[in-house]
Amino acid sequence: MQVHPDRSAQGPTAREQYTPGVQVTGLAAFLGASAFVAWLGAFATVSNVDGWYLGADKAPWSPPNWVFGPVWTLLYSAMAVAAWLVWRSRSPRSRPALTAYGVQLLLNLAWTPVFFGLYPAIGTAALWIALAIIAALIVAVTVTVLYFGPISRTAGLLLLPYISWLVFAASLNIWAALNN
Image 1 (cartoon, rainbow, N blue to C red):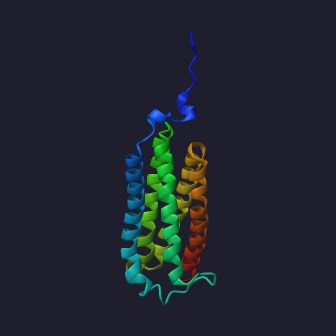
Image 2 (cartoon, rainbow, N blue to C red):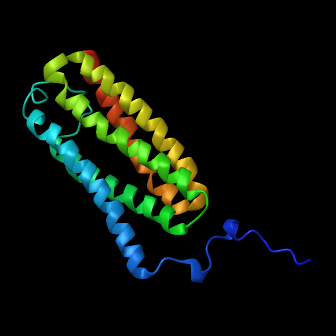
Image 3 (cartoon, helix red, strand yellow):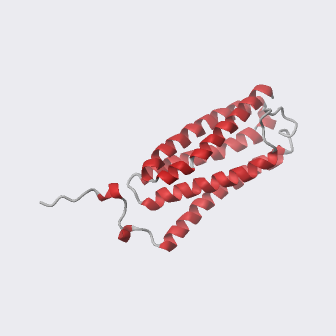
């Protein structure tokens, strides 16, 4: 009896790889999903950054508002590439990893309208709810890194700046909740 090694642990063979066209389409889909989340979040941000947030008491370590757009653009791009790397691996572990990715993307989407959009309606309570969301988001991204890393080390590493930024953003959120 001949024993065959578990190919799933080794990754797909050349024959099982996605074609270049499918890979480009997959990358475009992940980039598009990230851009869509960013675009939806921008609706709540745009009207409120120059509204209530302009006069809000912000943490002394808050960067100028113009920093957030470029940073988030880089982070959303890195997130999309990381998810694409996991998807294209065709690993049997990709499904739970991409599910974790989807959960964190939904939490990411939820934070912006709660923090920026709900504050005018319910005040400081919105900032505390947003803090709970960002705490859950940090946990979800950490879980995603733990799923991504064994499939693609690069994918796991691409999410580490995102976690760092989320922890930084959580510190800004805490300050805002305590001082507004």
